[in-house]
Amino acid sequence: MNTEYVVRLDGDAGSEQIGVKAARLAALAGEGIRVPDGFALTAAAYREFVREARLEPLIAHWIRRFRAGCDLVVAAAEIRSAFRDAPVPPALTEEILAGYDALGGDGTDVAVRCSPVDSADGVQDDVFLHLRTGADVVAACRRCFASLFSTVAVGNREALGLDHLDAVMPVTVQTMVRADLGASGTARGESTFVRVRAGWGLGEPPAGDVDQYSVHPGRRPLIVRHHGAKLTKVVYADPRGTRTVPTTYDERMALVLSDEELQQLAVWSKRADRHFRRPMALEWAKDGVTGTLYAVEVRPWVVPTVTIAARGRTVSESRLG
Image 1 (cartoon, rainbow, N blue to C red):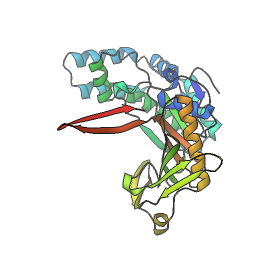
Image 2: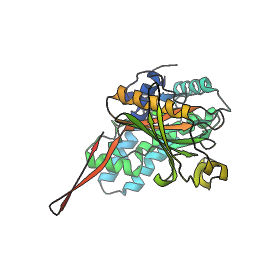
Image 3: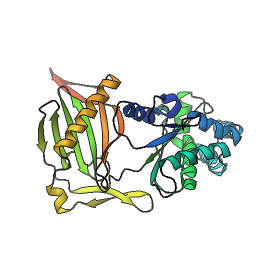
Image 4: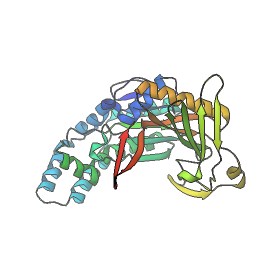
């Protein structure tokens, strides 16, 4: 399925082609770390859409209007509206549908996410959940293309002196992980051990609410467990949003992860650090239907701020790990 416009998330495609987050996930898959099955629409796919829809003159027109005094909100909205009204070229539609069919086709739940090449221009990582038809997937990809011209993104590119016509928006399509019925959290390496945080449902609950584990991997792994309150969890809400609900008594009393699952996450965390040659924070999710663990995102770990008091003054320092 790897073509100019669509690539599977299991190779070594660069971030300039499929976006930073998607490229990192593809790198994890290459290291044998389980990620949700999926594919990416490339920067070339975005450019083909813009070219076929003849959107470049319209983008340039509204950017000129903005620079001449038109309200930024209005200019950006006009560009997004043109994107959403433009048809997706038949060749690109065919490749998107082929990629979706490879995931299971109509009836298969997928998530469609924006995958910015560079976060410097403030593009939002919009996500569209529970899409179950090819038509919905194509429409969501087009909406991701349009998000490149949000009010914030246009304003930030102007402030940074970036050319709007050079900007691109790859898109990621992946099968849904039912973490709303399972669990999710983070894992990150600290010296000789891996710190794992876990809660029920989607995302990561407040710091004091989660289970926390310290895992020392090896032939005879050592695991230290801290039982969190886990009072609430985030679940999917119809049609495609989320909501926070109370956990059950059994969920509050139970630990989220087994020893085997913790060892798996520790191995993945160490493997990600080794691949990227720096400390990384690994976001994971556990499918509540199948019980399978997945890595869903990886990013550089920001070392917490260190505050040093000396002779009546405070000095704070933070750095990327």
